[in-house]
Image (cartoon, rainbow over all chains, first blue to last red; front, side, top):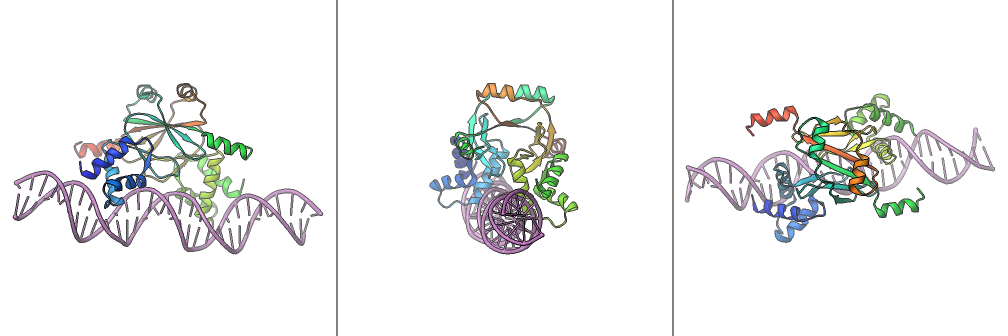
Length: 125
Length: 125
DNA sequence: CACCGTTTTTAGAATTATTCTAAATTTATT
DNA sequence: AATAAATTTAGAATAATTCTAAAAACGGTG
């Protein structure tokens, strides 16, 4: 594990805010001002391949990175805001229903966050 | 509903292949050779807002578009290949577990497709 | 149907996210 | 220390998507 890899893993693992590559880059620069964005992508990809971090993609936004501890997500249909939620481990149930072994699963619940609900009302929808 | 919107909805709804905007563009050109890619994006975004089509994003790949009938997905961790699978409607169960109302949910099971399993073996992993 | 306001499309530039390439640097190995 | 292997850098390249302004199409009204 390289020094950048280590620090990036640390940043991603300890954040609960679903950071983009850009944000991770900014955070990493606090410690290593000379680092370059490509290095961040290199390391993120590596860490993801090795299952040390999780990648979360929401339609139409840049990929976000997340700690690996199993949990689910709530995504606002209006603004795309991402929030953690934990519905427990459904692996066994899903494998049974699917009739096959799976490596993991990714569950996103779509809702309308408070802000977006207000906006809807203002527009009379 | 405009003529392009109508045709795009038709293409997306009748395809089972999770087309990208580019592929939809190519398909649409069979009928309307003069159409432009921006029009495809405009319409896809509109149709998506209106819940007439579904958008599927897999980490690191362009967004894909899908018919709206409820179903789940199987994603290969190796190559990103996307396959339909149907685990039934879990809305009630998930709402209960989450303790809130949801608009919809998106469930992706991660696995290794046959091709990728073979590749892994070849590399001795 | 002629006019007017609204919506959609077009063309192409602009932006954003991400990857790639080749050289330089660092790290690990003999 | 010498060599090989992996990582980082810089910056160009690519890919996906959005934006902008102008043109065209559409819908209703008088």
